[in-house]
Image (cartoon, rainbow, N blue to C red):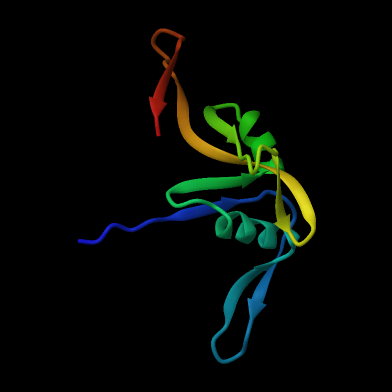
Length: 113
């Protein structure tokens, strides 16, 4: 078969949600965070996960996982145009390690996810 190339964009922040439509109702999300996540996806490279600066901060401080995060650079500049005229630091999520507590030894084991 043919190879499929995926892209993903993540953003963290406030959103609004609601059901839209009468004939064919749909549950939809609205807001700048949704628009930013869409922009992260559309400006991502194939087979990469692209995240916003706020998502980077949340992932960096995650208690049970270690995220391998790398700054996205364009023309040697860390800031990337993501929303009209707005420049923002953005990041690639290269890899995730889940931390599992070993209850028998009290140690921490790492597992690739």
